[in-house]
Amino acid sequence: MATPALILASASPRRLDLLRQIGVEPSHLMAASIDETPLKGELPRVHAIRLAREKAEAVLAKPETSALAEPFVVLAADTVVAVGRRILPKAETETEARACLALLSGRPHRVHTAVVVAKADGTRRLRHVETRVGFKRLSHEEIETYIASGEWQGKAGGYAIQGLAAAYIDFISGSYSGVVGLPLYETAQLLGSVGLVAKRAS
View: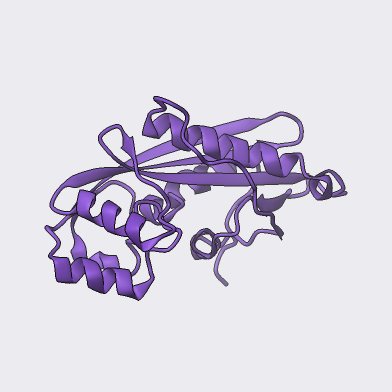
């Protein structure tokens, strides 16, 4: 049986880099355009799972996906940063980023990442990973320095753990790659379950 093509339902360079880290190269990149607004009373875990599923379904429904002649698998993921039941936004403005950093400062939070693989035959498989992350207490100067970097733009919770914000993380319990945007162990297991395996280094 031929190995199916992999469609990454994301425009995130971070997720693409993470896949390449484990020897997986998508055949196609197709960003999923969905409404990511949390539903009223929606818990962070449920929100991440719902969005990952909706991204996969959105890409499956694209005409260019239906037109593919080869068998394929869609991989979709979503990452949510939460303090308690509160879902933090993907910061788009300095005001949002400052509010996120002020809330995260000096306290632990949770990062929920859901990963879905979907096939045209109706196969759907999902994994959810929860990671606890702690921030040091941030000074006003540290917050302003980070804001000036611009690294926070479009990031869940207003920070990127793989960038400058690494200097502010005093502990992490769980999947580091999950916080970046794609838990690699769980993703590899899911892909293997539908016939996709990482290429071995030569």
